[in-house]
Amino acid sequence: MLKKRLFILNFLLIAALVLAGCAQAPADDASAAEIAALEAELAAAEAAGGASDAELAEMQAELDALSGELGDAEAARCTYNTYRMGWVMDWADAGNMVDTVFGTTSDFQYTFWQNTYPDEAAAFQALVDGAYVNTDLESRAVQWQEAEKIIAEDLAIVIPLFHYDRSTMVTTDWRYVFPPFGAPRLAQWSSKSGDTVFNDGLAAAIPTMDINRSTDTTSSYNIYQMIDAPYRFNPDGTIAPLAATGFDVSDDGTVFTVHLRPDAVWSDGEPVLAQHFVDGVKRLLSPDLANDYAYVMFDIVGAADYNAGDVDTLDAIVALDDYTFEFTLNEPRSYFDSILAFSTFHPIRMDVIEANPDDWTAPGNMVSNGAYVLAEHNPGENVQYVKNDLYWDAANVAIEEINFAVITETATCLAAFEAGELDRTNCGYPSEDTPRLVDMDEFVRTPRPGTYYMGVNTTAQHTNNTTFRQALAKAIDKRTILDSVLEMPWRVDAYGVIPPEIFGYQEDAVGFPYDAEGAVALLAEYMAEAGIEDAGDIVVELWYNKGNEDVLDAVQAMWEDILGIDVRIVTIEWASYLDTLEECNVIGGGGF
Image (cartoon, rainbow, N blue to C red; front, top):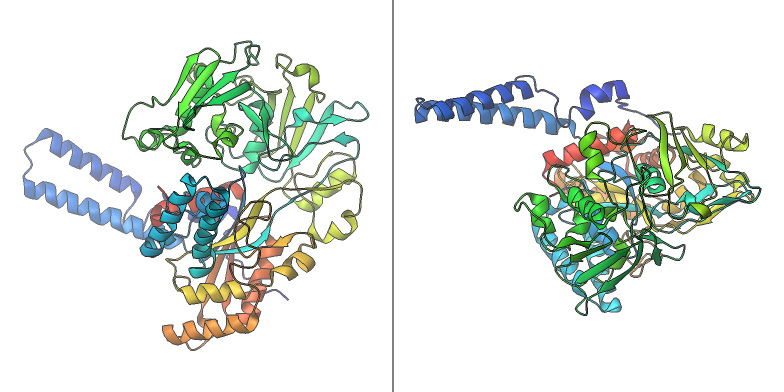
């Protein structure tokens, strides 16, 4: 029986403590307001002159002290030892998992390992840098495997649990297309009976509709219905033209020239121009936006410096004419053609943004170059799209209306599907229902390369020790979680982070299999080193976003039953969870 000591910082409390606490919550003796006032006073004194160096130094010392107190109070609230996360890959290269998620400059990991273990981080980075310029598939895979071993085994800063697939329910009336990367585009779907309205559920409120701010799957699913990149992914992982008609690459592999459809227009009738794609990339990379996906475009000459604010212009991506744009890479990248199908190449209309800077993504303001237009959006409740009659391929778009309802409970989602209210269960279904669902005609499984994992805070007490982290990894019976908890026996238990569909996958040759005795032995080794006599005195705080109770409660039970440690749980709503971890990342020193 699970002991559920939830610190549950229920999200009335989260709003006051965790979400604000990781970033703006005031300390007892220092507040952000006090610091801002003192900064202004110091700046005014420096500008006016007259104050002595000693007086200015005294003011600066007071400011430093207040900032330090606030920083300490903020950091104290980022108390997690482990956090749950998952990553669905964006393109078919192991680097999109190993480096994108866990790399030394990644904003998607909150372990701080690159600061805790600088020597290992340098070795990891050398492997990453080598892999990115290596055109030999076999030796490139070995480099990714060696880098994977550093994070999943040598340091155990990540504990992979299982690899994803796309498991969902779709009514048998619908012809569906699921690409392995990115969100499904419902413009490719059709009804056998001629139905033109499609109803689906969202498991969470949409964090953002801003094309250049989206980094999560919920936002992407919505934006992909409205916005076309130059290319799209096919079901087999290859790419096909979408907003573009083709592209050329220079002999040295660094210059891409993309040719756009001359017949494409936006939903307001304006032509879709090359400059709109250039503007999309530049806005994505703008320092003010601070988008976590900016790194994807760092291969473009000058992009990293532009994103850092070190230069004011980005000249390596330009519109050659109305329907052709060109960009230049620092070095050849074997995977970069697939980035043309990714959201980092979505176009934007700067005139629309500038006309409605605060609500340009609202219905009536937002324009689309894709198959659908945003008709209604009630945040946290529902969103509706209607067919874009001006879309270049409108004649082949069968669905005329899309309705997404926000349904956060999986049981409610499944009930709505079985009642005929939903055509798909994107909002999930209870794991206990899987045995009866899996043999139904509506049950759909398709490849979706990705990994569900737990990151480990290398700066927190206990998890700042490698032996202890390895003990945690060995104490999780992943097969039992898949078979008996999630009741998804077809899924693959994960030991490394590279998924089975990606070249370089190592099966169980990396990481830690379930080994209760080995876990206990490692724990004993750690306790002896740390001078801890009773395992019950070891408190581990486990954070996860709501909707993952089944898996993480099972992990809690395994750690407590096998290791005898005290595991405490914090649950947070998805959007706030991401914001909180990102703020903790800033405090902890991770990221760019």
